[in-house]
Length: 193
Image 1 (cartoon, one colour):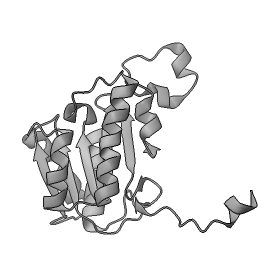
Image 2 (cartoon, one colour):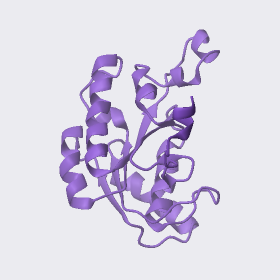
Image 3 (cartoon, one colour):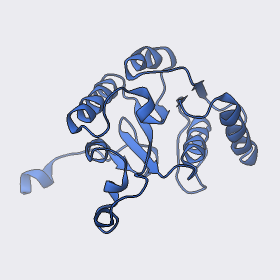
Image 4 (cartoon, one colour):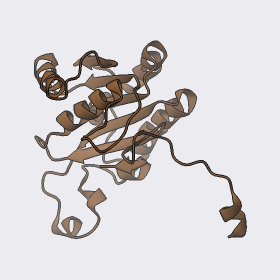
């Protein structure tokens, strides 16, 4: 105990205070149509400008790479435009990619080219061929992200869906079990929102 307490361990650096750790993996989960993309876009806009998120969570201006593999440019642009106008944001440091079939294997080149502090992925399931119910495959996927994080210091915000109708025993136990797929998804995240 005394040795552990004597260690000089630096405080966790945050991209978005208390929500998204720098060089970490955050999973934002929820049922479909529960504004996950809008929340992620608001986080990206706050980080891309250095504004506070929701007027509470501080950020420092950083580059963001936003991967949309679900909505398409028309819907994404409308949501981002509404959020930006509502917060008086112009020219955030964000690069958007929409429906370009980006896979986990493509991210090293993206990171080297754009140097983002945060990569937002909507949704993580669409950038991998792994079986989200297979703990081993999910662990391998997250291992690839950790490797990139270790090499480049990039943080991840992965959007994920909740189970359509979790069994009663799940509803009454661990909220992390409401995420669709293997429990390795929540186990490998630094933060689950």
